[in-house]
Length: 162
Image (cartoon, helix red, strand yellow):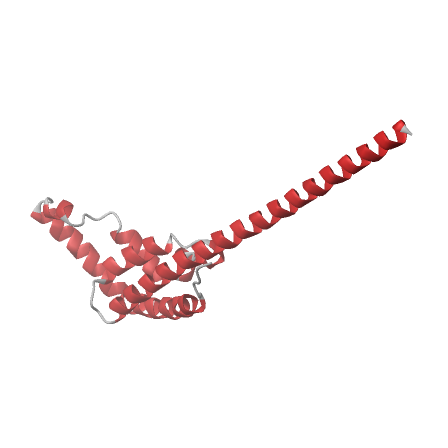
C-alpha cells in the first residue's frame, strides 16, 4: 500500500514537472517568434526610411538639383545599409552610378577640399566634370530606374506598433 502511494505520488510529480516543462518550452517558442517578428519589423521600418531618402535623392538628381557625383556618393552609401532580401548590388544593377561613385569617392570634400592646392582642386574638378558629363545620361536613367524600384518598396511596408 505504501509503495503504491509512493509510486502514484511520484507519477503525479513527474507528470506535473513534464507539463510545466512543456509549458515553458511553448512559451520560449512564442517568445522567439515574437523576437523574430519584431526584428523583421525593425528591419522593414529602417529599410522604408532608407527607401524614402533614396527616392528623394534620386528625384533631386533627376531634376538636376544636385551634382550627379554627390548623388552617386550618397545613394551608393545609403543603399549599403539596406538589410534583408532587398539589398542591391550596385556594381551589377547600376553600373553608371557605381562607376561615377568609384571615380569620385576618394576626392576631397568640404573643408578638406578647401585645404587643397588650387591646382590639385582644379584637377579633381576636371576629373569629376569629365566623368559626370560622360555618364550623365546613363546615371539619370539609372536614378529613374532606382527610384521606380524603391518607391513601391517604401509604400508597401506598413509600420504598426504592437
